[in-house]
Image 1 (cartoon, rainbow, N blue to C red):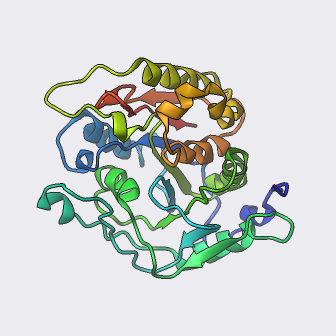
Image 2 (image 1 turned 90 degrees about the vertical axis):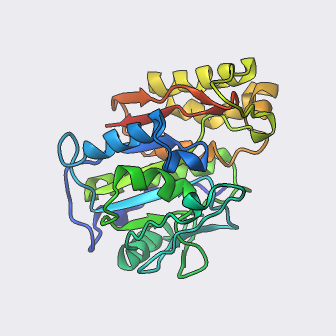
Length: 285
């Protein structure tokens, strides 16, 4: 890949004011039903949202990288009113009725796109003006956190064909946005294998391979060895079982790339759904 160089233009955005540094989040979102069920995961997102304006400053903008928007190349939502996408099937009507009318941020999206697309960076980022919107990886966690839906929200797509190192490097370039009131949110899962999921009443014992992958990668997150997260496939069969396809892992690389060296981390939701979906989440900063 072409070396991704720092985006100096992200230090001088016109539409976003300099601010106290925002944290960066990785949220395990799991089942879409977590968005509406009264369970520990939804309550943890509600509690985290309540910390903005007290422990953390209020975001000027949320930039979300969801496991559910995969594209050729990279794109930012650039519409003024992004639609709520129900990108799932077989769930109750109550879930399909959910709406998250957060405004978009067309001008900020244009500025971020231009900064990331500077010549020589190797990562041109286009503007999507209506094809996508807000998928459940985004609104499913942000609606419990910020139910008023009054914070402008932009999604960044992921090019699944690109190497893990590129996704991490883009996260590194996004780092400067945190000093402009931008809350960066990666929404996926540290372990995600729906083929092996055990659905049913009560908790299901996690698989040994799921526990191993979660422990190794969670250890890197906790120790601050975030660059090692790019090498997840070195775990071989354990990695292949943890992620038959790894789109749910990639949002972690964006969040981890946006972390400054030495920043403290707070982990939560370190448990499993359906034996093969890790809900482990983290806040840095």
